[in-house]
Length: 248
Image 1: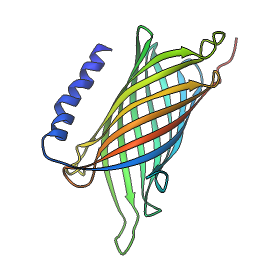
Image 2: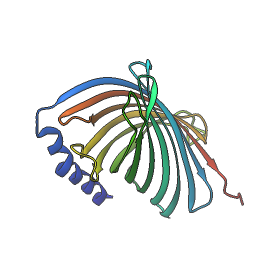
Image 3: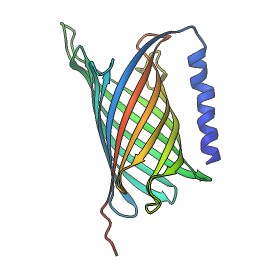
């Protein structure tokens, strides 16, 4: 786990920090509101089916921004590790209409550990992003492609129990960060894609249902060099866990 943290910090130092602070930049500030449903279905001891879907708005929910649907199959490769592969489909809005869609396969490695009562997780993800921009105003449609690398680290800190009789009923503080880097021949000036700094809380309703409210300070690149977008995001997540394993 120490090596995972070292490689993550090295990635930030070598590639992200120079890109962000090497030149003067213009920053456009926005606010967004996200809602996301996550489903985790345990098929057996080795395999888990993952699915999620969500919608995003901008400017106090006055403008549609994006929708996303995603699924994946995860295989446990140890007590604290797993690999997964999946596919996402997303649409992006402009002037109230979907002007661009994306098909996004991905592969990932997940690692987990603990530091006392604090649960730590690392996720390394590779994405293949296939975009299609629709024709509009005599501008023909066009396609483009790039890879994206993602590294996420998260710490979950238990705060207090809601019920002494139910050990799962713990309110937790979640702190994390995720960096996104582009790769491929069509990225132009956008090696750095975005960074998410996350802080929030999670509250269980029962053994299978969890509500998460997160503040996401997202700093991302735009199509213009040295112009960036800083979004303050309120993110509501609903996590639903199912277990289909046969009970002995």
